[in-house]
Image: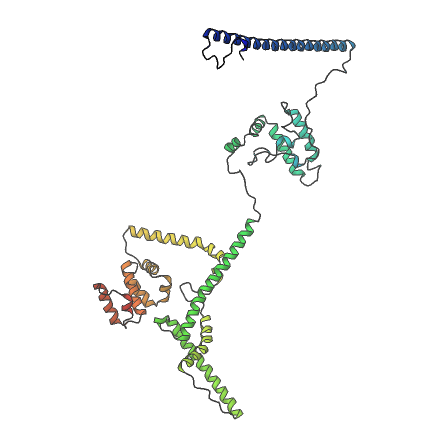
Length: 448
């Protein structure tokens, strides 16, 4: 690299310093000269290209000027280059809504979902810096309005198209509306801020809402009717079983089931009497004696009696339409539609009664008979209130069962009655409970 001036070799590890410095300087100068020559050559080449380009441009301008002078002198301008005119889209002749574009206008402030310019036949993407003037808009509107006027065009949808064309013309001929329309074209967020968000979108129902509501009310009414029937049937089945099997109050029977059983036994006895008389008459006429069958056990006799009493008890129970406390046969009043009509009335009555009750409590007045009856009925339940006799209701009113302690004591008394405990035993259990010595209630109820 350093040429013949200096060479470092392993045989000369200790060369002279002045000789080394001189050789390095001469090598650096040689490299600099080569770099300068390259820069000078490039500069010269660029100067030549620039000069050639300038001369070529001047020659072209001189030729064009000479042609212009010659054309003006001859009076012909056929070869003069013409600037192509800006083409504007003519109003569409068909008026198809597919060519009306789209615009974000859910509130129908302007032209709804269509582009006002497109409706009149102008495309904002093609006119560039030369938008349609008021004259162009009026010209497009007049042509389209004549074509789609309902008095002249009886085609389907002509009236709607004419209304859309008139709306577009109204917007675009109003300077403020047109400026706002152009501003919102690419700024739906500002439209959203100014005209609200309640109209961003809306799902069109696939089915008529009124039909769905009618179907729902019919289904709900059928369900309430069936529920009331099932409610009555549950009590009826229990009453039939209690009357047929002669259940005691402790086993689930009631005074009503006892009365039904007594009636059923009378009917069954009359039926057997008639059958026996008929059999005796037939036997006497035929001269045959009745054969005795095998002797039946007590259990078999009881089951046979149940089978004979059951259909009679079912008929007697089916004659009862209302067991009380809402356990009645279904009627038209149990349909949900009629119940909904009555709800406002019942709600108003309830609010008025409780308001009156609150005012009387604030005035610290004593409870009247109506208030005592309502509070007692709410405490023991509607079913229990309807099931008991008038004497028991009067007794409930005197016990003040709307008080929690009195209600608990009364319910314990009812449990002991259902368990079949005697009056003396109930008194003993009450005393033991007051003293705290009655630990197990079930043992108390099953001692007798």
